[in-house]
Amino acid sequence: MYYVYVIQSRKGLTYTGQAKNLEDRLR
Image (cartoon, rainbow, N blue to C red):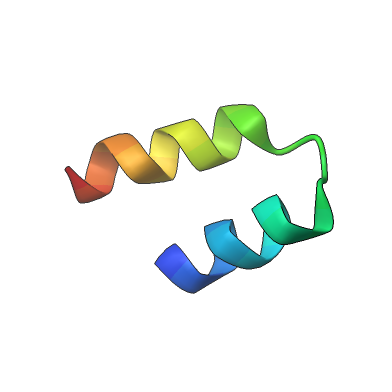
């Protein structure tokens, strides 16, 4: 699910909350 976060981040979408959650889960 990391690639999804990367793609979203690249697009610059308002997915900071989701992205942060994914990053936290990966850690």
